[in-house]
Length: 463
Ligand code: LLP
Image 1 (tube, rainbow, N blue to C red):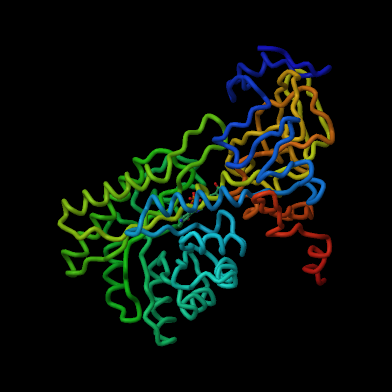
Image 2 (spheres, rainbow, N blue to C red; image 1 turned 30 degrees about the vertical axis):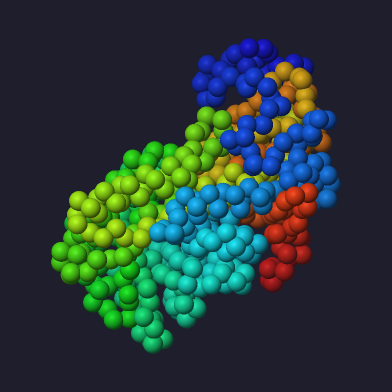
């Protein structure tokens, strides 16, 4: 392993012993297709392209930082999920990962449904023409307004998250003279192997109604007793960025057991189960995500087997992938600014964005990859930490990575796999202007969410 060629560069050997990362990749200019969107490649001159467009030209036209979303890849992934699950199942894209009107139209065209979890997401979906009956409404604390709007607009289902909500939704539906289709979200009591902030099926957290102690069975009893609710199924979402199918299998088994108990008690076979989202994607070359067809096969096999054993008709399965569809389809393009080598530690590379466009590293200790994309370089690898421009030392975009030692201010670098939970969790911290999302397809780029302006910030400030 070579030392950095940077004049005052870090001494790699010292920090390698910490073991936070592996050795530098054999070729720093290579783009691992696991973490980059499908149409990303390099020209012979070494500039990275997406959808046939060079990032240097994209930066010129749209500025940095900016998210570039590969529409072809998004559609391919959406279609792969749809095809894998076939006609006996439904795929609800989880809008919280990233939602815009263009995305809603792509989903509609590709035959997917949509999961929303707020009035704002619902408004976006409806305004882009997603039929209400293809929308599921989630949330652990839906407001009266959100419930009323969802029922009035005729959403396909509301996922009930608490005992109070059973009553509230029933009340709103009755007052509007409607019968609302609902599912009950249960917590199945499995520990998903992911960051604790995004694990949702263990009992000590805010979502759902526990299967334990017969609480979920009691929720079913209550919902079945209310005329203005049509209970169609049970919902489980065990967490996010999960690679191991075991948690889903346990969840499926426990949900089917509840269906059997409901049949035994009420003589009713609930027709649907939703197993939520949560499938992991590759953020670095070390991650090995499952393909949609493998997931579909594993889930339908386990549900079918459990139902046969319980002598139940196999319910219609639905899933709610968010990250797995949009995550890999976008990258964030940054311009390199200050470069600060800290002798014996690492080199800090500051970019023109940061925790306001990607909070995931600070919040979940998430790992990302990064590459120099405006040119190739044969310089030696230099250990870097890519940081933003915010007034906070935790403002880290990529904690440990290697970039060429001749990196210079003005170079463009890109962080792949930022399609999910980056723009949707972006903030105005330090009055940063949230970056645009630019969709790229077949040699054409168009802004689908524009860059915020200072006027946008000032428009809200009415003091
Ligand atoms: N369904 C429900 C009910 C959910 O709560 C979620 C995510 C999904 C589906 C979609 O999960 P996905 O397939 O995208 O993993 N901000 C975190 C992730 C929070 C996930 C919240 N719920 C992150 O950046 O990792």
